[in-house]
Image (cartoon, rainbow over all chains, first blue to last red; front, side, top):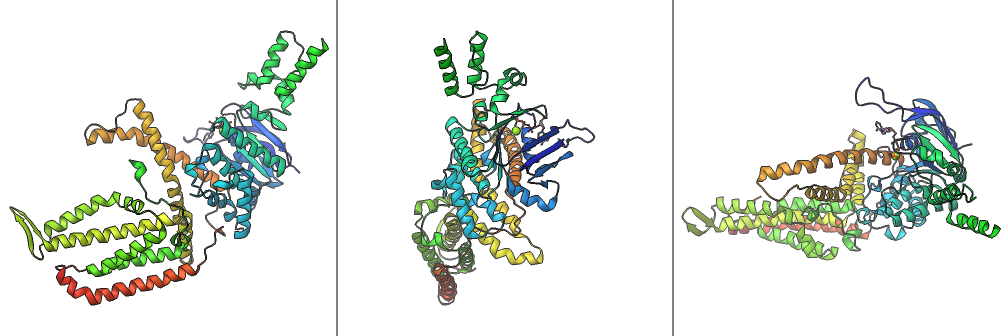
Length: 283
Length: 280
Ligand SMILES: Nc1ncnc2c1ncn2[C@@H]1O[C@H](COP(=O)(O)OP(=O)(O)OP(=O)(O)O)[C@@H](O)[C@H]1O
Ligand SMILES: [Mg+2]
């Protein structure tokens, strides 16, 4: 069974003015995310990515269609806590996700709300902080941490609830390159070592290629769905909706335009080098 | 300037006071405050001063930091003192020039009041200096839990307190940021008369308010994602437990109450006369 399943979901925000209907932020959207996957979601500003994240754990409820989390429909009130425990969401601004004044007390917030035993909370908090590499900072005040460190604390706060799926909505958007790398590593560890399903919303192509699967949204709809190689092979389509392709794709594209017969799905520098090497040797 | 605010600041350290149960600290501080109010002579108040000094000493918080907490209320103390000196006419006349008449009663009452206010503030800041906000609110939560049965839900209030304390540094940082942004566009917060300065603050508070609303909205979402449902069935990681420290503190509470009452009774009259009519 899919961990998250969108079935023909349409969602529209309420307008501030009465009688004026806004255009849907998500339109007739269907997608199935399997357990253990690492999915990246791409799309330009306002294409509906954040709305999708909020629909996925019942923060928002669909107008049409339905969202199933591990088989539970998000409109069912009784399953609300269970759904939020199964699918955790980390947002863009770490400052607005941290509740407590001490790192470890913040990470404990979720498990405490779930009514878990104190000794078990302690275990989870310690292990969550170790997973994201913030264990040494457990007694610190969050306002003294860097953006990347704060974001890792926010991630720890979610994994302490032991969810089976984590959705991260542009968690690296406000960070510097080092903060971004640290957060990215922590996320990869969640997927690889803990087997947590990861849905990763981002604007950075270099981050998206790390995923097993890329979903591209355009204008509230699903535009593309496939492996990074499949998606970036069609550079023209990606560009037509205002997104970039990874630099390796750009380079190989330019070389191809000059008549050099490179493949069109080279995502890593190593692959590109190998391909060029093979061509040179072949000549 | 705004960074000087120490309200609600917590200094994590390992000390007897830090390790006390927040509920016991609350009990201690409230009974201490009552006793300071009840002290009616210098000996009782002097005893309270000794207690405060002792608490500061064992808390390992530097005296300088503690005194810094008094800074915001220096003005209040000054005004109270001046009013006392100006209007209290008991005792011997010390100075009598033109219309200014200072009496020993006035001076002593002023000192008494200043000491009393300072003790109240210092002991209350000691509470926040040595207790993490979460542990403080946990304590309040537990103390007020019985009220839930009669429909009074204190959990919401304590949660609001925690969040307020958590966001004070964030908002201060934001004010600084917006101020710099406005200054770089020629705003002037330091010059001109009061009205001009107040006007200069408007472009500061509008974005601050706007951002705070957005923050509140995002925080609410984040809390919902972490299964917050108004504190029903909530447990706490650091479960509160009384230790030997708290029984010692309980003994001290009884000791302080008894001492102040006895000192009030036995030194009260003599001192009341000596200090020229200081009563509660
Ligand atoms: N609270 C809201 N009220 C009304 N409209 C909203 C609200 N939030 C988002 N929208 C609108 O819904 C659409 C989709 O927004 P959404 O935030 O999901 O986009 P996004 O893909 O996450 O964009 P970004 O990359 O900028 O984060 C946009 O047109 C946006 O203006
Ligand atoms: Mg978004």
